[in-house]
Structures are given as C-alpha cells and as structure tokens.
Image (cartoon, rainbow, N blue to C red):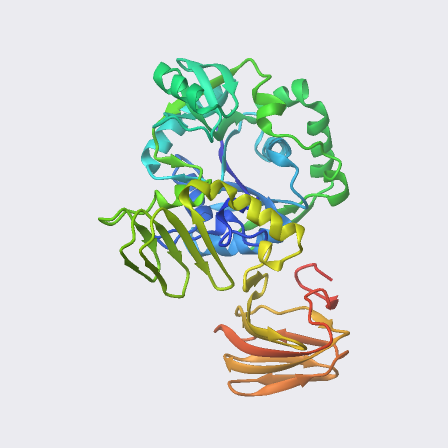
Length: 471
C-alpha cells in the first residue's frame, strides 16, 4: 500500500495582510521558530509512516519558491511531485487532479492524505496517530475527514456532527447560540479541511456526484507537461482545459453528498491560522498579555499582538491592538476587527495598489529583488542571483539600467558584448539593448540596479530566451 501525503498550497491569505500577499501567500509566512507554514506541512507529511513521496498542488507562479522552501529542509530521502495549476479552481478541482495523478502513477489502492499547507498542527505525534486511524478506514473504502475536538464555541468554522466514527451531517458556520449548543452536546467536531481516501474511492465518488469536474480535470491532466526538477517532477496543468473545470469546493461537490464518510476525531493542536489573533495564539504572552515577535518595545501596553519583520515597533499606553510591520506597509487593527483585514486587502486590490500582490522583496526563479527606493523616473533595486542561475535574455523599451556588483561574480550579456564583473565593477545597459545577467560562481551574486526612464513597470520586459519557460 502506497501512502501519498498531498499538500494543497495557495490562496492569498487576505486576512494576514500585510505579510501575506498574492505572490507571497500565507503558506510562506515564517513563524517564530523560523520555519514557514509550508515547511511545517512538509515535515508533518514526511513524519507519516512509510512515506517517501510527497505531492504538492500549487499555483504555477509559486513553484520555484515552493521548491526553495523544500530545499531548505534538506530531505533528499523524499521525492516530490508538483501539480502546477495555471489558476485556482477551488478544492474540488485540486482534489480531482491529485487523485487522478496518484491513480495513474501508484494505482487504485494508493492512499491519499490531503491537507492544506496553511494550517498549523502543534502535536505531530497525535496527528500521525490520527492519520493511521484514517488510513485504516480509507483502506476499507471510506472517505475520511479529520474532526477537531472543539475547545470553545467558535463561529468561524464549519462543524461535523458525528455518531462515533460515522458522519451524521456537515454544518455551516453557526451563530454564537448554536455554536454553544454544538459544544455542549459533545457530538460535534470542527471541520479541519483534512481528508484521507483511496484513489479508487475518490474517483468513484466524483464519477457519481461531480462527473463534470472529474472529466474536465482528467482532460487537463492528460494534456499536462511533465518535466524533471531538482527534487522530483513537475506537471504543468494545461491552461485552456483547466479553465473549463467547474469551480467548487470538495465539501459541496462530494463530502456532503457521499454516504460513506467517516470521521476521525482528534486533539492535535490544530489551527487554521485564519487571522492575526489565531497566529498570535502560537506565541507565549508576557505578564501583560502581549504577544510579540521581532524587535518590539512595549510600555503600558496590554493584550496586544505586535509583529515586526525588521524595524523596531514601539507601543505606549494601548491595549487590544494588532500591529504588524512589514518593509512597505503597517497594519493597525483592533483585535475584535481582525477578520475585516480581508476587506482592507480587497480595497487595495480593487484600487490597483501593488501592496495587495507584491512585497518590497519579490521572489523570482533565479533569486530575489528588493526595491530600495523609487521616485519620478528612477528606481533602485538590490538583486540577488542564486549560484548557477540566470535571468532571461531581455530588453526594455522605456528604461536604461546601470548594474553595480556588490559581491560575487556576474556574467553579463550587454548588446553584442559578454562581460565578467566582480565586486565594485559595473556596466551600463542602454534602453533597447538585449541583456542578460548570470551567476557563474558558487556564491550568491548581489548587485545594485539603478533604473532610469519614462516607465519603470515590471511589465516593460521583452524576453527572448528564458530557462524558466517565461519567454
């Protein structure tokens, strides 16, 4: 029997702005221990018995960052497969493409343990014990959901009513009075959004309850492009065919219609990290109830969450606030209003503000760039290129660039010239010149780029050649 842990990684994490952005979503958020939610999910998957292969479903644009996160964990014993969606079509489509892939590669009897990347589970041993029970039920043809023993009358989660291991019904997010009733009855669990099933079972259920989604996903998988990567294999799902997949959640598409659903109740220290308050619960409070992460100084401050990514944050005489600092944005919210951060995120997106999507530091397949300063007709960036990596051969219509090497070695194509530059050496790239930057060394290449021109947007790039398939 093959067990394939499957991690669903994506989404905007709008309630955790300004740290979570569309191009750097919630799974990449670093916790106080220095590891990201995605890395915690990977290690949790690897802890399951007899696992040597992990499947990850993510957006095509997040692949390189995802692989970098996994590479940091140094788990060469785990082979990885990445199913790369060209666009989000909700969890029913993600479940379908994962199941069809596992069925194709590992057979009908392979067991899938499916869970989101952006949840936190503090008791991994208890999670593995719950997963073992779920796997046993899945081998007997059951579709298994993980139910979290409720700690309080939460109104932000869906609930599962159960009779032993049998699911009686799924319930939408209740109001306060009903949540208290559910808690008092002892018959309800929080719906964790984690599942376990065999490939045969899920394909059969989707053929019965959601055939349109299954068939559209099957066509998308059959037309996907498969290629080797450093840690395993990636499959790029066909863009046009995947766009035709009906959008639905696995709960509505299958779980609420199926008659063979079982639940494994568990107490595993679970949190969906659905708000800044939930993230703060992972931090031990001080004597005044404050939970802080990063460089902070608090005076006469009570029951606050302070999160700093770099700059010193000082708070004086305030209470019940959430204050989150990032290099280009600061959030200040009352603890009772943190769910409304999503509205702020939507406002930024509707008004075209870059802060809904990008951080000041942006990850690219070849490394990162950080915008240090920008103004009328100029922008200054710090560029880091990984050893052996290269940017595309490209040109710009509206800007010229000046590159200065800070550390490392740069191999530069500039028009019809090829240059090798080292520390404190530079080159000027006129507007319209074809150019490419490469790191031929074994150390990180760090450069300063000064852009000048009438238009400095990131879309002023014409790519002629690109090792990452973006040309």
